[in-house]
Length: 268
Image 1 (cartoon, helix red, strand yellow):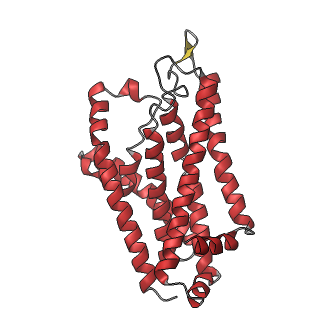
Image 2: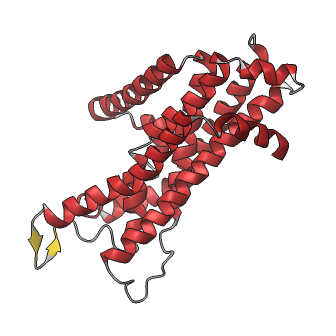
Image 3: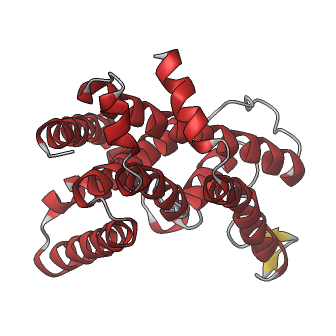
């Protein structure tokens, strides 16, 4: 596997678009969180010197805050994945790899590993960003561990790998960058519309388990949840976490299986 990953590295190491998109992704996470942090610190009214939203960037709440903020930027790594994947078809490098002796399973598996590595990288950036903002917001409260609430970082990773594999699946099927990005974006917006419409108008709670929604529910909105949600509602959310994770794992398995099936059966 390391040899094939080395070959993949040779493909992208001099590819300027890859480095630009990767740099944008890496920069946007701390930059966007700083924008929100500065906005809350300077633009909203305070009561006795404290924001009306509390201290979402202080430990331990910062783990949820930064993870939720960063999850809003999912479109950027998705664009990177779609670009790298569709380039394989545009430049026929996938065909050349097969001619050189790779199996189809080997090729598509390595591409899935790349998606996994990118998701880990995004999670690492969120981890470092969280430590930074938690550090500047205030000192660690007495009795609170530095790593308390780090489960939200894992939930971010689950959400990121889910979005990334959806983008990868679309790219393998469509094979054209622009069209794949358009379909990915439309799907994300369309599912949100369907979820909102069916839940609010017809009280259909099963929409909470649709592919995008089930991972979104792992990271609740951090700024008003303690005010708007009752303790009972928060407790119910905690009880549903294993269900959300289990369904997300099933979806991930389906995404990967369909992608592998498509690549192994389609014409090169």
